[in-house]
Length: 334
Image 1: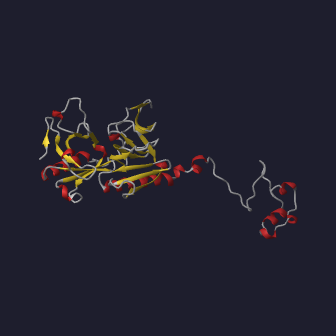
Image 2: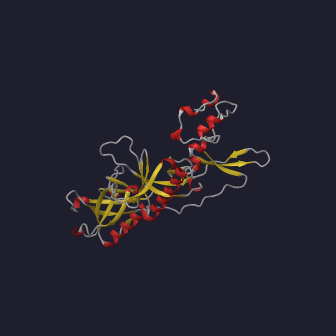
Image 3: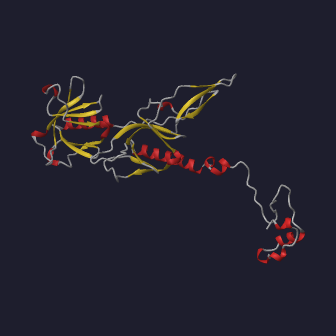
């Protein structure tokens, strides 16, 4: 069994695979699972035997770990071997016995597990109040029944916002200036899909989103099947004209649920009549004029003569200039 230190943290000595795919004594490391700092720390020896100023030889952020699994089939000669997949890399570790290996696999998977709560049902505004959007943030407006004056309540945390669907997921960060050898990090974010768009927050208690993607800018959301991120499971992407957002959920059902909601409400915005520029800017109905209803050329309606009216009713192929005889006012129609 793995050990626990004085602070109740999982720890123990295990061997790490070297560049030659071998587990040797020089590869012995002291592993420490620090849940407070959300890191897996590796030391050359137990911290009690090292100087106080000595720092870990390697640190792995738990947000970067996508999977921890039994690797005895991949390393049959290594014995009790398990694999940690993080940021596209794989680390093979040899435990001392079966129980220790299973305990580390279970504890690491639990620590890296993405908890996606069920979506909250949209909440209605209280009586004599309404929700309004100001600067991308939903505020609760109270209206007095007597004076008609309005008051704005403090901004609500993301967890309390009315939404179509919300919850935690892991998002890949963006690199505006690519650097050689630089990898995009993956961080846990709280996502909210509402009428404004797809917003993501650092925590569910934050009141200001890191960013909001308007529904009108979303082209589609689709599932990613091991194309660019083979070590990431339950991954989907949100496609816009400027950028593609990669998001990882806890289960495949959660990913499909997000994809279904995003595509549904994004298409509603595109096909909605409320977003039609013709309906938005047209103030008067357009009048259509036909040959049986000639258009007036001045404030006073001009009536054509009988000769011109007869020529107007002829088929197009039989109309000639000689057919149109009459006053100059009638000639202006043609």
